[in-house]
Length: 132
Image (cartoon, rainbow, N blue to C red):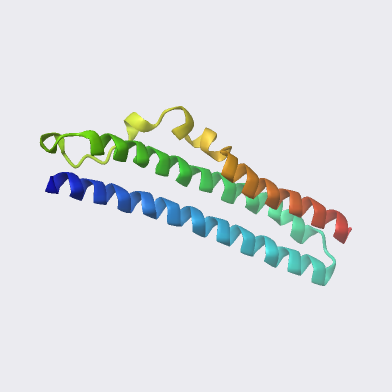
C-alpha cells in the first residue's frame, strides 16, 4: 500500500501545481487588464485597451492548457487509485487520458474559463466604449 500512496502523492502534487498555475494566470490577467485600463483612463488613449484583446486570449489559451493537463492527471489519479499494490509502476504518462473533454481545445471552452475570460473581454468592450 505504501507504493500506491506515494504514487498518488506524486500525482496530487502535479495536479496541485497545474491548479496553482491556473490561479496565477487568472490573477495576472486581471492585474494586466486593470493596469491597461488605468493607463487608458489617464491618457484617454484607447490603444491601451486594445492591448487587452491580445493579452486576454493568450492568458485564456494558456489557462486552458493547464486545465487540460490537470484533467488528464486527475484521470490518471483515478486509474491509479483502483489498481492493486502489485500493479503500481510509478508511471506519470497521461496519453491514455488525453481524450475528448481532456484535450486542450475543449478545455479552453470549459464553462469556468468561458465565464471568467468572457467577462473580462466583455468588461474590456464596455470600457472601450466608455473611454471613447
